[in-house]
Image 1 (cartoon, helix red, strand yellow):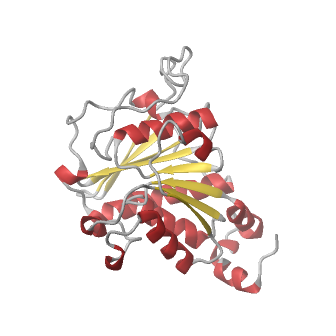
Image 2: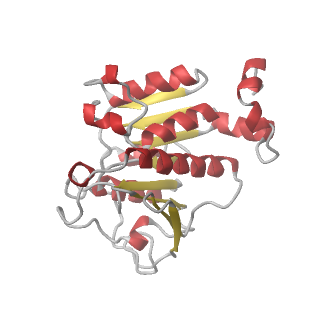
Image 3: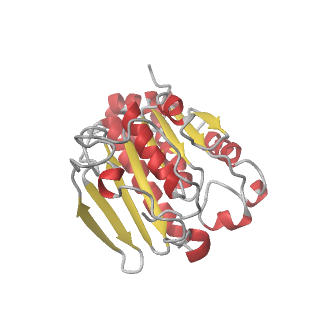
Length: 268
């Protein structure tokens, strides 16, 4: 593919980077990234991936915009209240960069649709706000052999890690199962600093672009924790667990299933 003069100008700051250049920008333009959730994490990630020129961005979310979302879900505006989140997100992405194709999936991610959906993309960005969906993202990406960039936020703390199926620790290597309902408070119950979603979501977008370009060191086998109160990052090393029920030596999870729905959110 050849870039137009307008595209060369739009992406000039990328093209100037030796690690990107014209070839790297073409990789970005050909990439297909699925964002699970058009909320706090998915909003900044979608905007920056669109600005970067990602060719196709898929967004799956079954929710509508609520007034309480606007404190952190920056892709949505006041005029979008009660509108579909994926439609709202699509409009903002295409207003920012008409080069981007946005595929709307107005649905919940479930064990019935996850594999077919994820197989159509190069990688997945997890912006879900509940544990069952996060575990489902992990399992589906493992079976589909697609990289996953996990993110989570709660109160003043956030976390990011990148998972390469078969090569790095998966989510279940560290957290075997979702916590019992009610054990961990949700953002609705405990609150979350709105700007934190921007920090974590943007780091997720950074990881996604690194994977597309094949540059740098991804956050594999590492959990990057951020404490906004102290403005401090902490890196926790992880490793593949031979007893992991999904990717271990004797797996007990051999197909997708849905964990019981609950409202526990984010920081996991």
